[in-house]
Amino acid sequence: MTTATTLAPHGIVIGAGFGGIAAALRLRAKGYRVTLLDRGNAIGGRAQIFERDGFRHDAGPTVITAPFLFEELFALFGEKLADHVTLVPLTPWYRFRFDDGDTFDYGGTLEQTLAEIARIEPRDCAGYLALLEHSKRIFAVGFTELSSQPFDRFMTMLRQIPRLIGLGSYQTVWGLVSRYLTHPKLRQAFSIQPLLVGGNPFDTTSIYGLIHFLERAYGVHFAMGGTAAITAALSQLMQRHGIEIRLNTTVSSVRIEHGNATGAVLEDGHVVAADVVVSNADAAHLYGAMIKPAQQARSARLKLAAAHYSMGLFVLYFGTTRIYPEVAHHTISMGPRYRELLKDIFDRKILSEDFSLYLHRPTATDPSFAPEGCDSFYVLCPVPNLQGKIDWNKEGPRLRDRIVAALGASLLPGLQETITADFFMTPENFKNDYLSVHGAGFSVAPLFRQSAWFRFHNKAEGIRNLYLTGAGTHPGAGLPGVLCSAKVVDALIPALSPPLLPASPAATQAATQTATQTATELAAGRTSATGTAALSA
Image 1 (cartoon, rainbow, N blue to C red):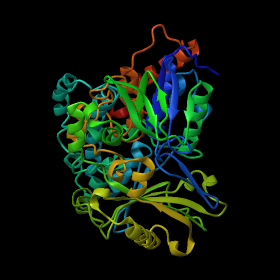
Image 2 (cartoon, rainbow, N blue to C red):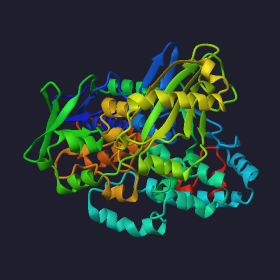
Image 3 (cartoon, rainbow, N blue to C red):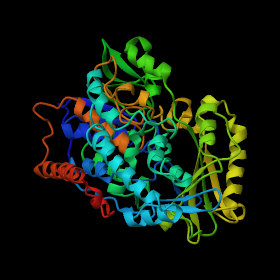
Image 4 (cartoon, helix red, strand yellow):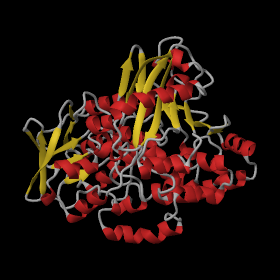
């Protein structure tokens, strides 16, 4: 166990979501004393676990697509993720169910995916391979090079614009997919990825098309025990290496003196002093409620005033008194409308009578999530954020009943009779529980005009010694995005000289091996048993 010396500079991290956890570990590996503050009663931010009548539910993220980003955190201290968490690859990654009852299983080997595409539209097999090649090129720039690149200087952005234009980043994800695929069902299936990070496929920059290659290169995994198993392992890692974790502690503001962040002011008025402050709070909440406008740079105020936010989320958690073995681990149920439904959610901000749903059945992989003979589910429904002025006290129960009826008539026959221990969250919960502005599910939306330099910077604008991680900062939302935001902060925060916590030889070797292996795989186009090596140039 590593203990922190009182002589080391003190870093505090506000918020224990994955971005904050990763930042705390990276600060500690640099030799800082680290205190992690969170207003919840457990770390993980939105990645909580709910328990009700013997049923367990992951509250937030359920899909692991870049396990090497977690491996890096353990490698910093000479440890291995696999010694603490069991990740299971899923096949299929997602099952799509269309409104006419047709299905499409996406994931597994390349050959399995091509066979599924051929069943719907044989001519789109070649188009998918071309889309994957384009996605690989975006990945090589957008993820490998730029996801951990600081964009706090405009010249950094200017240097990248020709490359981004060359990759067609001015296109939307829908435009990119439609360029290669012809069948409406396949266009829908391969364009929904922006919704996983809060974006409308018809507005989101096509740089998010890199997700296709990310999934193909590393697969889609589930952590046995749920995402909470990962947060538990990370909590133990932090404790083993001397990071102080203070829960049930709400930070009301950042203390700023003469343009320097010098600590956090708690809700009760106490101040936690620090040499470095990292905020994992929602970036819009940080600038809107935790820092006085006069203390911010004009650029931050302008971004806040012009911010366009992601959609909201309605999440229904429930158990069933029977098992539905034919339901996949991840199912995406598409409604009768696609573009028009998304317009209702993102533009008109009205609650439609129809909907599309993401259904998570963890008991398909880990039966411990439910009592014997039962299943555990959550269903996520994209809805307008709170700018839509929807009365969720009235509409929440009504939407719950409509979703149960729809699932009972399709994926989960007889659900009205088998559902038990159900409860739900609305955008109001996201606003109150997570301090998410407008109850947005993923902070600011992933538009081109809100990406890289145009997004909230990882190095606070106009304030020294304050850094930002999380969904509202570069590179964006989703587990890979928030973990990479901590890598950006790691690159920005000065290393201690000499380091007060020298890395052990084992840690140095493990971290080097992880980084080298990842870089080598990406450069060579190798993948993890998915059959895409043949796609390498």
